[in-house]
Image 1 (cartoon, rainbow, N blue to C red):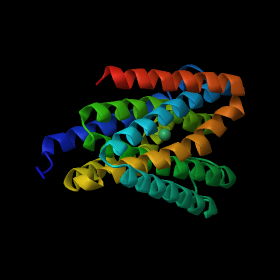
Image 2: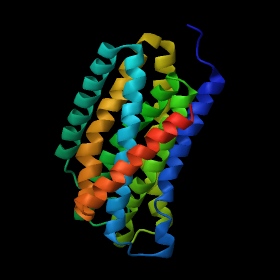
Image 3: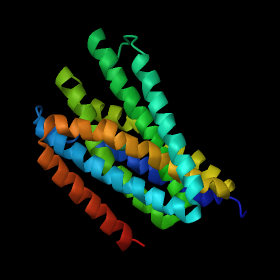
Length: 250
Ligand SMILES: [Zn+2]
């Protein structure tokens, strides 16, 4: 065990911070238009789904290189974790005042932000454990998550802007929803660096939770706004682009 270099820890934090800031980019289209067609949301959710699916398999293949059983055990834990948390979130129906909205809208918005925060918690773990697998894997997962955060910021802004929230505040809420990414990436990275034999568990954990999110959140959202054919074409192209990118940066 060689210990964790402070420089690398700072780098992991900065990369994860960049992924969080990328979420705010999703609010920028609202500087120019107030009513974005929702078909755009479908297309961008499809991109997010494809990127996340490819990133999950990147984590899994890295994990099985260290140990198949540990990676699968980690994946099952990640899956159980995300299913449980989602169940708990949906049971919470307290109306809370939120970003200048009426009570009805506030509880819906709180659920959305709660789900996205959990979602981003998992992605932060993904970024952190990926740097445990090497800089190449770390950069691949960072880029996948950062690009995929843009449509997620767009999705948040599409809820907030029509309710009278300004684009700049929508951008802040979007970045806020991704704050768990830098906060989780550092402990996840330090954890797998300190306990190297647990790295495949960590990689599997993030992959298991992320694959669930693709099919539970991103694809259903995409299919609500765009045709299944368009969604399928975009998901396929996004997966192919990420596979090519992963090979090229190594
Ligand atoms: Zn995401």
